[in-house]
Length: 292
Image (cartoon, rainbow, N blue to C red; front, side, top):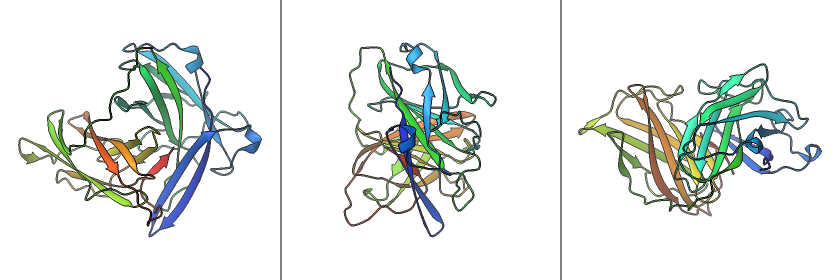
């Protein structure tokens, strides 16, 4: 299988101290025609996919490095949310989701997931989410994120599943989780997603920090897999709710994967959200970065 190489374009808008970063990917032409980003650099993902034959439910190695337009391997990664690299693995119908962190060899610049396991046959997309040390930063001093991706086929018996229904209260690992979208989300406008967690009728007030925050949200659009990664609004209050400000780039149906940690265990809550078209409002700066 040929690796897909991507060109990254970053748009940055600052308003009221909030930064919005849009990262868009497209099939890349030769390096000389790349659009410069991050101090005139472009990056692509180089993996061992061509050498592998992945089988469902069988742990296997997935390794990769990040290279620039000159073919040099990137080694100076910034630590973001306690890790130099975040890897998101989703089946293309969004039926399966993983957020994992590979081992990193600073001498070679190589990342390795030694036992990546695909739970079923299907077509998967692997996202590599990272930041470059010494590159551009947001107003708070955090390095801007870059997201690259490639597709992997596993087995041959794949039948896509429907995205699912849109009920807003579900139970995950014994916790009743309710999503409040504060109205109907619209494209290009600020949306607040608030998750309320309870158990036996009582609010959960003992969440632990997971990767440096009380929660993380990854959102993907049905079909195109537009990628949004958001973190909570800045609060450490423990009242059983965690809120995120996000910006949906287009109308459509999205699947929201929210992760929290309690008692040393990571809990993943999944919800489907419909976003309506908003032709009157342009994309405004926000707390998430996205790519498609």
